Image (cartoon, rainbow, N blue to C red; front, side):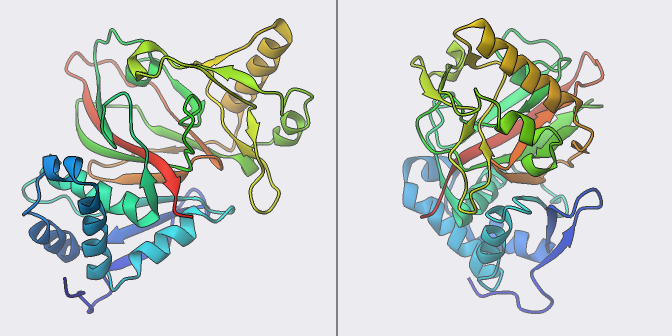
Length: 305
């Protein structure tokens, strides 16, 4: 696990669209060394043995002069940032197993992923295809996935969300959309609304595997600076009266009309990681194609104390 000291193992820059989003590019040699040093563990091993997930993180950080974890934490926990795009050159022999191990190393440098009831694991893999019979917009290729936060319907803290593009074919459109809460022009209006801190009912559809509902406001507890944090998704909130419904409808309409929303076309193999209560994320519709296919990996969880 010796670090590769010369040149630097990764490069850091700002995205061209936003100073809030940092782009981290890891050298090919680091990725190759990580794959070689972790080949003794297959995906089943890291699913069955939780401490191996931290070993993946330790190996990657060691290869990066023990600076990568520190860098990622500083970005994602900062209010004025809270997002990074991690990329590297596509490998000569792509491997989904290597992708899952690499994404797991990244998440475990920042925090601890929650159990995902939809997959029964600490991560989920799902595809978007031309046709779909599911009960969520997540897999509806030709419908927009509106701006939202993850984990609105679970008891566990969901501080971060990690998304990795594993594979795609015939996928035009479908760009990721992002909005930082502080760039939302109507934030003050909705944050000071009389229903902003009133607990609402949140419940997921059957496919998520969580039958019970929970209760929390749209604007959850403030961060350490006393500034707003948000936990919202239109599909899973169940208003109990007309007043709540109007508030939610107007809030969603404001988010979808926000001009400060960013749009990203992410390459295969890239990882986008967000502070889940500073950033809302979504997806634009795809352009119809009968052989459309995109596979994503998701991990979401809580930061280390």
